[in-house]
Image 1 (cartoon, rainbow, N blue to C red):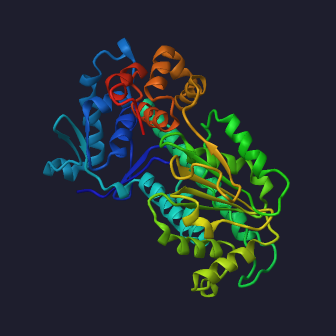
Image 2 (spheres, rainbow, N blue to C red; image 1 turned 45 degrees about the horizontal axis):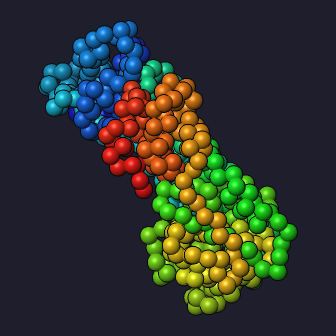
Image 3 (cartoon, helix red, strand yellow; image 1 turned 180 degrees about the vertical axis):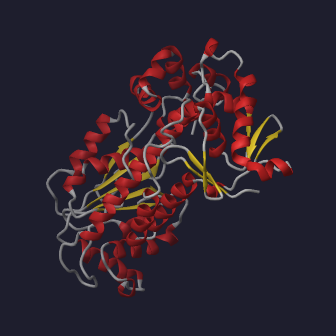
Length: 430
């Protein structure tokens, strides 16, 4: 099997045993782009046709019939003379589709996505230097605009996806630059207190929730009180608690110049709290060897590090407030924003915390969110179907985002095709 290597983070290019291959026809490159995204797995003919031609109508009346010609030219370019003689092609007809039998690791897309995933893990483990190095290596793979010379709806979708991940990686690296360069004076047990910026990226497609955002902003950006305020965000699954908390925290960023600490508590129990507290202390600049082993001492150090500072702590998916109380700041000037399940915190509680409850979006806000997710042009072509889809999703942000993602991955699908029976039967609940 010939050694092949591919790049899609720029113009689509390929090399066989160090020699660059040529794909002169744009449609050939479009077919190759679809197959590369599923490298090593068969892709149905219909999916290839949708990704290359989309909804072209009479302009391409026999798209299925045209596909074998594109596959023939790609096979000839990819295999080389040795493979032609042996009959062992890397591009094979399999079932009702085609399979490009190459290692996904031979595509720069794989290395890029793996690199930013490893960087995210390093950030969660409070290894900012390693995270920044991984992001820099991943970003160095780019040579231009993704799939710059490839036509078709699949390439357009893949381009948006990859460009979005690149922008996200750039933002994360800028945050890490600030975290690693910023210090604001010594504290007990620390070299220098760092300014951690650990929030997940904000959502560009956020919509609605203006009343709740105003409630949170009033608490977070008001004058400091005698203690750190606590804001609970509650609501059923699918109401967008995490998105609201992260969006509100980004909006309040200037009010907390000493940083933001973040922990994803979904799926973890109270036994994880000491480890998260140790991670918070390390994020604030304490050497690993200086982190106290006793949980009470660790908590005391955490509060000493926050004294006199303005730091926002965001805890996402907590089971309740009490199990995570060691992670909550108490110093004036700091604040905590915690997302909880609907039933866990029925009232404000004895600590005087402020509770923000989420339910469905209004029909107008749900439709606006769908327009932002799909793009105004696509949603405007089917306004009635867009409204039906918003209703089928019960006007909940989570199901709407999942439905929009499915449509974006299938550019040829109409919105109306998704409502019955895929969503209409299940009410898109979550």
